[in-house]
Length: 493
Image (cartoon, rainbow, N blue to C red; front, side, top):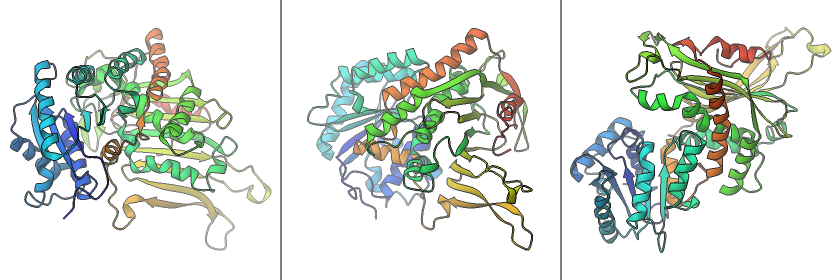
């Protein structure tokens, strides 16, 4: 039977604000169960699920069981076998704006400290809507739940961190009144994905790639985040964000920084973050190289789907984008002249996230003059099938002197006995051990917003309208023109 004390982590209480929300049900509870099965939780550990609904602890534990059965990557063993895990859970009813109840929450946590020996160490996970972040942080300060003296307290904040640079600054200012920067873990779950973590290893642990990772050998880079789903009932949120803020500002720019960063002087957290910030500071975009789209009606997997402006709680006259494609440049010595093409959209034909490194074509030479030589491609698949695909040229078997593209394909799922951890497992584990490399530092957030804000402000100033594209397509045709104008094609279609 798995034990909690397999790894040496400080004892602590994980306090989840938003216990009845979708994130907790789909991601956090299953992640905690899988960490338990892997023996990766502290020996002395407790979870306090904080929600606004009336529930008993027994009912909350039943919610945990149902969540594991539905969403966990490992099979639920059974209540009897998992009693140790279930006994970690407690439930506390709290309206986030009821200041008096925070006093009772503090007393509850101190009671658990006494019973479980968690020594006052806390992880506060804010799995709530962004408008509640500041309120909860201030109440934690007011009621003395984040003193960081003789114990540690950390806060985990989900995206979006602000709606633009100014709102992000305002929010950061409030949260910093309670927590120091090193206590704040701004989560981007894409950074917890297996292949994203593998990016630095791929680059810096292989002499095959690192010497070629520059503008002398790389022609261009593509980053694609394609989703088949629409807004899935999140109309009010999406009306405030759109694809630019929802995907480009965080997920896509974070991947771009890992691809383009210089080798850090050390593999410690701050050295890696320093190099990522340098990339964000070097980013440039021409507004004519940005495409803004919105899905119309169409067909996905044989099913007719509605247009975005027909979705529930969406303004019929909305000008919010569900698709963005752009070409950006990292203006430094390594990447000068290399375009980074990025696109993300909803209601696209297939769901996948990938990075394509396209190497330069060989010059035409005498012995290849009649051959069509495809460029070498390094494709890093983030999801759904995490892996690495490398395409190169080889002689076609037989007597003919012809060349054909061949490939090497590595998939994480093909490794026998490997069931890769979900992103939230790695991220929760890192928070508990105080490792913040896979979380975003404030200046990363700031420069990401600066880049995105300039595009959003241009759209507003020039009244740039969305271009409608059929659901089930790869976005507006203008996105194809964007890359074809440079003599290139999007990979995948």
